[in-house]
Image (cartoon, rainbow, N blue to C red; front, side):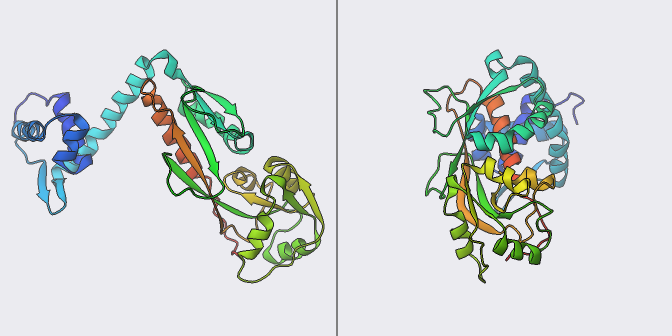
Length: 303
């Protein structure tokens, strides 16, 4: 083996090949020819005097030694990328605009802003809250989180989060399945005017009927409806991710479970320009992770 360390470029090509599982795909990602990538790999193996890659039935894969080498290299490369983004990213990339509905901002994103600041200490978010779908190009918006009441046949979005809905109330009103069923037949049913038919659709999805009280109170949106339920004013229909933090903090409970998929989805889209791609992609990944973690696991059975 040569005493000279392999070049940064050779190691980056090696990692790309391992992640792609194909010389051809790696070459496309690196904007190089397949022969150039293959030559780089042969040169690296000769320098290290060890085989790093082998051909399998499904393409290129690392040898046991190559897999271990790639594993040890990933973190240093990630550190280099983070350091570069931290110190040399363009000034305009230090602030990103995110458009979303006021309700989603209030109930879901704002409680997570302190975590965002911890994860992105040199990046700020400018929240543009509106019920309208803004044009990302014309309105200079970096990221949009959009809600579709029904899953679209096709989407340009980067991530989709499926919505679920289920009855919720304060812990003092009902803490068990039986108590919740009784409360549904006696207590006030809170109707969210933004989702006026949600109780009807939820009841129709049940395998066995549940009687609902005739006492109804109509409220303007999810924010008011869930807060009224948390205050013990009645029973609301909770929707993930809007209700997730209230459930985690114990202000609301869902004794009947949470298995009713509404068909609605949340979609993440990003501005197509390349100027702030690095920061935008990292924030997109963070938002997608937060949406994915918004499902609350509960032990209570579903109706």
